[in-house]
Length: 173
Image 1 (spheres, rainbow, N blue to C red):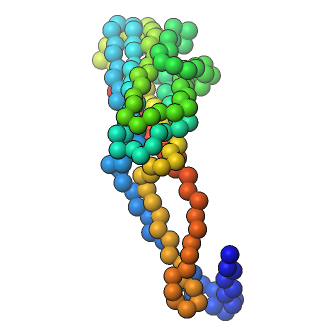
Image 2: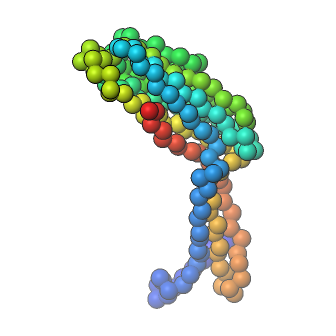
Image 3: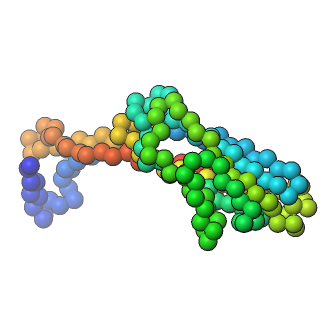
């Protein structure tokens, strides 16, 4: 490893490194589709997550959290899908997956009754915000290119360790 020494008189005047970053929305590693069904005081939300077929590896440590609308009665809540748990204090349902292979998808959801005052007005459709977080060892949606200069203006070697983690927010409507 090399150490760069810059005299105090030159501080701020010497370019040591520069970087550019990029973002590609088309390469999102996972997609979410959702649908809300409502009939009288019954409400059901179903969503599907799917790993992008262009991924080069599986997604790991996926956590999907869905906020339950305040109009839904907690003790009537039924959770659909594997490993779903409900935090009544936060009104949040969370599902955890160790791995989601390429091109695989899973269906999750929840259903329950609405409070009577909300159930009367059938024009009101509750929303269910979904936050999804996953990790990937091989895929990314952004990148950084770093160029470092040595004393003789030639490019120097830069070493970096990368770890890709994604967070996607979706509002089911």
